[in-house]
Image (cartoon, rainbow, N blue to C red):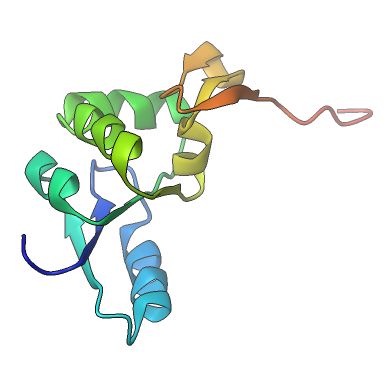
Length: 119
């Protein structure tokens, strides 16, 4: 991939249209191309990576693994800018209290449920 690319990872659980449109808006005039992709090789080749997510973290983690994109995301995180959006940001942490779900472990910490009085 010779052009400068931002890969938006499509593993079946992301709010892809809104995320890709936001990245296009921010990248306007920068020379970066935004690519929504299901291909690990394109994630690895991209200059920057965006990991969206929508729904339950357990489902997102399962789909990321089953899609074959988990390793590509982990490799990308070791060498280039990676941004998580919505549940994608939560997935970057070690763990979520939601359904006792392990995350990618890229950021130390856990997603905790808000404790609300009377609920």
